[in-house]
Image (cartoon, rainbow, N blue to C red):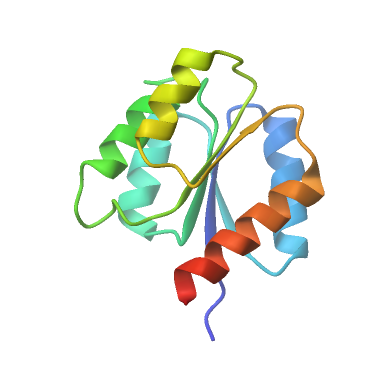
Length: 126
């Protein structure tokens, strides 16, 4: 069975490293994009099984990445977990309206994030 590929979209290097370590420790393959442009390019090129998406990103922001993915029929099915430090109810409402599977705020509980990712992927397979 091929490994699950998770795309982590995070511009804070330390946060990205921690996420990569935790996800690879659970057996996932992980790619990292540091900005909105890279995130969009890697989504189209690598076709990840799940995306963990920060909202505050250089080169367009996470919301533009999410809208781009959701507007493409070949990519719209990819589950997205938003992981953000942004504490804005209007943005949260807009993001949830874009059909994300989960919205988690930083600082986040690492075990909760892993459980959330695993639950989404298990639901996707069934």
